[in-house]
Length: 290
Image (tube, rainbow, N blue to C red; front, side, top):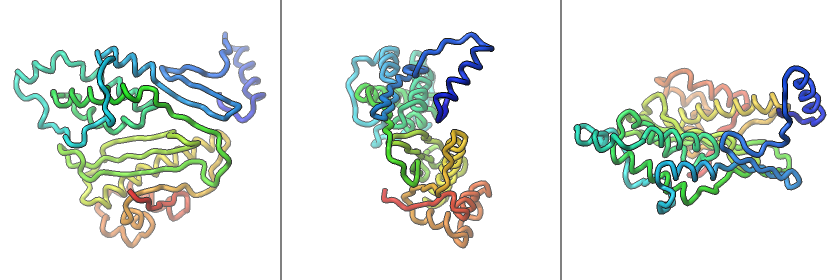
């Protein structure tokens, strides 16, 4: 239950008690494997899945593994060329619980660990026929989690600012070797930590960095509108323009100026709603250095 008024919450609970058998457990401290710590005096709330990480490490026999500093090795790219093609290669993967591991990592990535969202998304692309290279890469994510198991999302009460949240969007051009599609990544920050994030293959093949960044900006803009709507429902209507930080000046100009659209008129019209939101001063694309 979310409300600005404690008396409203208490009244709702009393009404529910008339119809259902309820127990009032007080402030939430544990929910779906996420530890929630609240210090109302200091205005701090933290979300952490350290116990889930430890259980996952034990589940896959990695509780004593060495640690690494990054979830992926950027010197070695993954592709479908590394998928098994012979009976011997398929036999090597029969006892590897790849799908179970990806499912566990996805739960972490969606819950409190945006830092493994990209790695987990890439690994999930090979779920239908993973190879040893993909299995080794998935184990590397566990090694990374071993050294970062106590990382948490920490939200701190802040003075009221003109913008309640900040959004960053980015893309890699043709990052997927199998399809040539780029990956969109975004994160929404509020009160000092991430509240929403995603790493996902784009639906179209971009012909240039500008196109990839513009498609990413469109997806990121959708999330901005969703966050604005949620805050409005909770009674905190956002009346100022929401900033969208991007590291491609050409994409910023395309979003701002309709005369640039001729160079990308082959893109689906669905991506052009961003230009309308910019024109209405709901979203403002801003260049930020990489």
